[in-house]
Length: 84
Image (tube, rainbow, N blue to C red; front, side, top):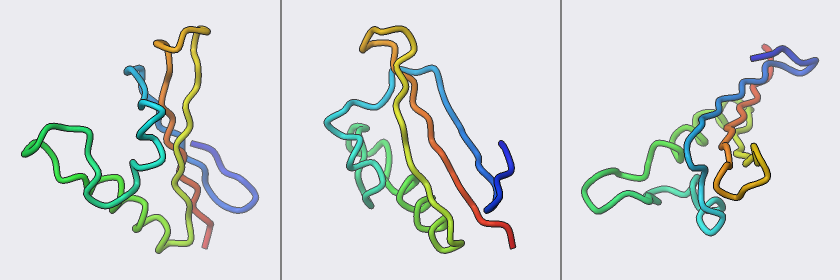
């Protein structure tokens, strides 16, 4: 978390397997899920995106290669919110 001239910047990352390239453009769509049927609604990221946007912020996702191997990708979610 850091403060910028426009507001606050929050980065959340994990050390999981990353998000497959073929679905990364869909993750903020309502009802999109990579989970099996009955194990998720696909609304979490969509609702987060809408809430942040309603507060004049942005939510985006980036992938970072941590070791040169495609299997060593790290997902980073970046939230930017303006100061009031």
